[in-house]
Each structure stands twice: as C-alpha cells, then as structure tokens.
Amino acid sequence: MKYLWMLEKGFMKDIVEKFPEPRPAYTTISTLLKRMTDKNYIGFNRLGRDKEYYPILKKNDYFTKQVNGMIQHFFNDSKAQFASFFTKNADLSMEELQELQELLNEKMTKKKGK
Image (cartoon, rainbow, N blue to C red; front, side):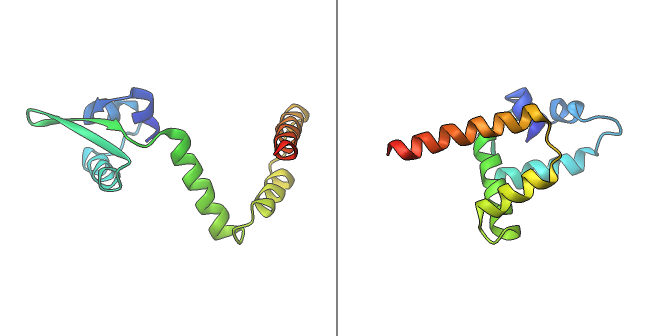
C-alpha cells in the first residue's frame, strides 16, 4: 500500500521498482495485489493485458483501521491502555511530548465545548 499511495496509480512493474533491493519476486507482489484487490483496498483498470492499480482505501483510513485492530486485540479495546503503553515505551523527545500535550489539550477543549 505504501508504494501505491506514493505512486497514486501504477502497473506492477512500477510498484516493484519502488521496493528497495533485493526486490520481492513479481509473483509475491502479484499475490499481495490480488489480496488487496479482494479486500477492496485497491482497484485496477485493465489496459490490454496489463492492470493499472490504484488505491481505494485512503492512507488515514487504513492506518486508523490497523491501529484500532491493534488496540482491540492487544490492549483489551482500551485506548487509554494503548496511550499509556505508547508514552511509556516510545522514548519520545521533549518536542514530541509537547506536541502530544498540545493535541490532548485541543481534544479536551473540544470535549468541554460539547
């Protein structure tokens, strides 16, 4: 998905070329593209015998789905447990901690306003 989001659309050879060396085999990429198509993460336009792939699922939606799944399975569906684990184990810089604090303050202000 990462490389397809970068490309916005592309053929299999374009996607494979984005991978660092040693690149995966075309058959491996073909299998992954098929699975992502089956899950409606990506779509394709057929151009002759070739397929031009494009993302259907937006990066933020995909990320949100993955994080929510991780929270559900590893943190007993508790966002607070996840946040606690993340802040204790991520070794955040002072700047990153300040950014998090600003985000929390904004969220709290919005919640109070409701």
